[in-house]
Length: 510
Ligand code: HEM
Image 1 (tube, rainbow, N blue to C red):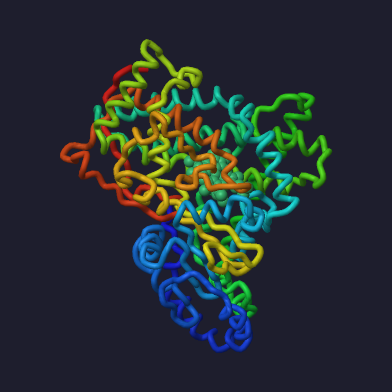
Image 2 (cartoon, rainbow, N blue to C red):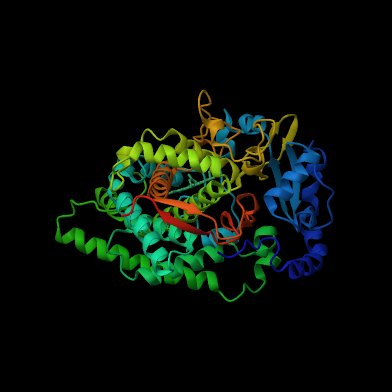
């Protein structure tokens, strides 16, 4: 996966252009700062003209650097990156104060010309402005696309894909003479295949081309865009915009998506359209029913499908990879979760989801993985109205950036926060990730909380149970559990830098 490049990519160019623009911007927007001087803004690191706090963010991984800055300046911290004002939130109390009661003021997503272009002008859900369009899509997601009933309907797909994952591990291990297997790659394939089948169906035309274009989209989404830092500058908007890659990508993606919609429409027409195999079918049925306030155009359907697919893939696969890495790095935990899996599944040749409901320690292991390795370490929102938090002013238009990662490692809320100890989620501890416990928010909070929790959890649970039931796992020769490379990469998700190569030893052969 491409490394996240903002604000590193092209910093030299950015700095040079920024200085060049400084005089112009001051002349054009200089008056805008008068209002701010009267506000009581949260403390923050010292700023430079034009680039603000950007120079503090140039080294290290952003979630760690920002956590370290917050430890010095407080749980509400002001950062300014060029024209953007951000209030970083690093305590559960502040998250509670913001999102309990006043949530509507903080339910807007970040927007900028660059994001707008990539997000198909908010036609999808992730970057949709907080309004009727978003409300309609959210309702469709919660009651139709990602409802508990729909997640259950995809159970067969997950079971088949989990069985395929087990076979692939066994086949790869045999072909390498009982050697090492790239577990990360196989988990990626598991998640991609499960998501493709659930969202687009078993017969996705041009699957290889589709996957290639999705990967391109992911790397384009992480490219730095000067317009995002100077959204109000007409001068920046006039600058040449690279090679038009984003636009070309959009066109190609649209072509492929149109093809997918056409194939589905033809099949539905030839079978009276009753069958619903996947999410495309569901959306086409809702479109046909036409009893909703905003019409669901093909463009909106395309954008929503791309959003769901993009949101589901890397987040879930990354979580699975961290879970396996933490388990092999912590043999006592591995032993305990394997015992549970083998006790509950004893005698089964293959795994069905209904068998997993008593696996409490496995579920605690998934929670602990999400606590230590939230795939999205921040969730940014926009403040829609001047507001006061903990006595500080949060101006309208400021980005409110919650550092999920910092809060879920804060010793104020967690004993030995750096340790991988799923046991902390056992017994009387019912802390959960559904948005009510503000010290643990890997899926975000409030109205825009991730609607894919059920989808993600069901996929993670069956994949992990399958790997732990069918195999024992050894580290490569010479690597000690405590010496594993756990370096993170801050990309579209907070993923592992090193490939996860492990040695599988069949326990219940397929
Ligand atoms: C471990 C897996 C996942 C994690 C950690 C995760 C995390 C997140 C986070 C932090 C947000 C932002 C929430 C906020 O602003 O409060 C989000 C939004 C979203 N996620 Fe997930 N996600 C995961 C899997 C999925 C899956 C599987 C899907 C779909 C099948 C999905 C669909 C979405 C969508 C559509 C949004 C935007 C919701 C909106 O703006 O209303 N996510 N996710």
